[in-house]
Length: 429
Ligand code: AMP
Ligand code: GLY
Image (cartoon, rainbow, N blue to C red; front, side, top):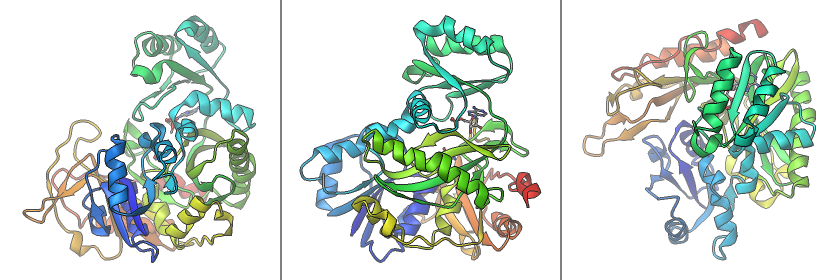
């Protein structure tokens, strides 16, 4: 069948790489895609906010499945538009409807949902402009550090963790009264700080049942030892060594099952990925956040470990029979190291020529911010996070060694990467 994939990052290249290997895929279109997804099918420019444009493309190209990579179209009701249209309603969309996407689109909704379902998460209260004074009183009952979260999507910048209570109060005022994050901070969640080590767990849900995908740990900060500014992700490792059977069973019973049941109770026919952003607090898992998509950079180490046909699993999602589908996971480690542009996540250059791809033969190269210059045939950098180098290994150490060896073979002006991935996990072996 013909498939349309939405998105342009490393996650989408990982999905495109996997979907293009399926015998069920006839032709894969990625909108807008990057130089990597171009190798897996055809990149197309589509204004996904223009429903008529999407509709004509889907009909003309006989698209039989749409896979949504990022959260924004889902939060904006992309899936709902398909369900409302007589010609498109039978075409499955992998990704929840607007209401289900609120799990990521509204922190207050997500916290309320967890509370209702008894899912372990940090204690919290939500405030709006009228509740500013009340939020100060609530902060006074809490211990530092103070965690403040803009309710809506804020491009990953909406979470503030502050040591000083006066600063926390000032930021509450900035967010609620002065719209620091625009509409996103009309409401703010104030929550208890949890101390532990984070991990990401993913499931594919079909509205009724689910399959658990491999766990992963991502590296968010630009600097070694988790220092410096936050980024879109500097790499990932799958599986997470401390996510052993006992811990995964706790996640399944205390978090995944109640989430799936809760979605059913709410009447949400949730079809797509659920990303559980978790923290391990002395052996107990807590939910930090939900996302309604695969993680990036986690996809670049998780997707390669799925041995089964991902199209078959997506068909299971569409048909509501994922429980009957096989999922086989590669037991090996996969480590993914991100090459980023010099200066990122602050000011950086685009358009630098990349070389050395042909010298890499034992890693998978997932493109993120890249584009092909069709005149010269060269690959150019086209974003802050440029390329993920993903490798398998019997051990975490050997997977990392292969990625780091190949990182040296890819060249572009200003190339930067973190050299310490996995160091924080060594004491869990
Ligand atoms: P979020 O956008 O909700 O993922 O938050 C961004 C980051 O802030 C998370 O990945 C955590 O590292 C951190 N964080 C969020 N909530 C908490 C919390 N309650 N306790 C400790 N750290 C948190
Ligand atoms: N790796 C975190 C995210 O995808 O949001």
